[in-house]
Length: 306
Image (cartoon, rainbow, N blue to C red; front, side, top):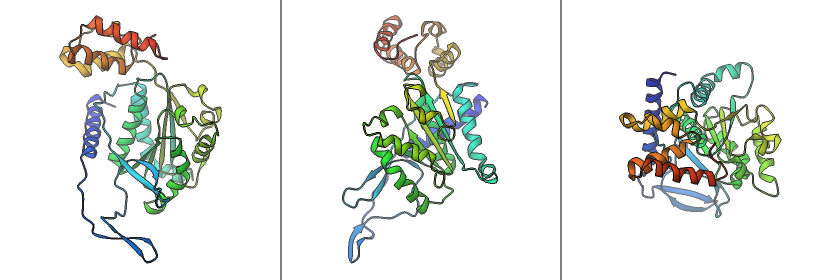
């Protein structure tokens, strides 16, 4: 993927994300909603299809029905590193979406699963969000975000509903950020739900499943990452090397880039690099002072600077 092409894709995806942030216009009551036989309540509007975007699932306490709550999405500027894990994954996913007919030819469910692992602050969540937003922009997809372990309990009910109301071939993206936290439940019921969902072949079609974890695949239940077609790719997103740190700093600082920073930030995550830029260029701190403060913060965390 050439840099100009990558920048154009990033600009389009980020621009669309900003459009989704705009507040939707309110409307007056225009029709009646049937609550039950003979009982009606005023309603604003109905839509035949869900608008493309990111959604969380909730259960309406009054009606016991599942609701899809559209979420605002914001993407910061994304620096796409050439010949990196990021660019390889993006190209793989693009190819996956384009080869739906090939999957159908061999009677294989058109779905793919990625599990990203590694220390926090290096772009796992952003890569997931970027891949989902690209599907929303390019393919009119619906992205379902797992907010809590309760979200897992709603999957089996929510996805068939989506498939009935929406076109069966409409792409779906599922995001499980910080998977280890979502599965933190003594009853293990969310894990059973997740495994059943990942094994589902009848409705898990035209779908991309994206998950991240800070603990690594060995820190998760072995049934999650050890079986293909649950997560087909287990990808490490580690600390940026010298080349990636240079690319990142140049992309953020432009003509103000100082090449000495590359050597002096070994072991810094992308998040730490961003904070270093904010501290020095936005808040006016001395570089060494800012570097020391950020280094201490990271050292005190579970990640550490290597």
